[in-house]
Length: 246
Image (cartoon, rainbow, N blue to C red):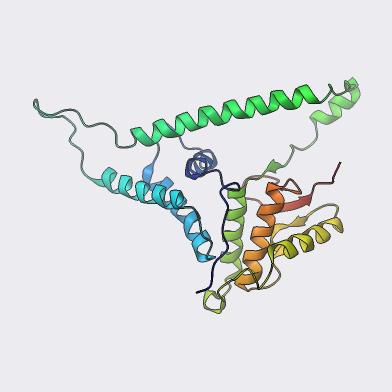
């Protein structure tokens, strides 16, 4: 039996991180999560990875099952006024919301600690003259930095737009297209493109071997700090740029 590529846990931070990404992306109130919407989006991410025969961690599948069970429970008719002998039923979403809020709190604390550490390493930048500062105020907003989850979305959107035939995809094994080799090819392409490249231009061939190897190569390069991924605005085309070594 052929083995699929393995998506490593140090690339994906966990199912709670994915849920928090979806909540922020969809501008959902974390205290009033629309379970049907968030479940649909979450399962779509998992489906995209499974279609590429990527072995995702079991905790992601457990969360998918939890969300589906929660969605079913939310669809059941609720008793507005409890009987005198019955206890008031808690919101089925409460446990999930508590976990997300706790995770968000720790993630934000970690982000602030990292920023504080970076500020202690670098010296303060020189002050900008007033005339230059005024010019900066009128420049366009900086592109939005993208996450690994944005890469998954971009991949799904690309496959849907190009409508590549799924039956023609062959099962992928590591020996067909080494990820390390594809990483070197991508770096070379980016070295010759100082302005960066559109995400889709890196996927030249409609074969699953090429698509998976390219996708995993991008994930590894992103994790290693070799590339950055950004969008001019939400839902716009994603661009990949090379981060030059210092």
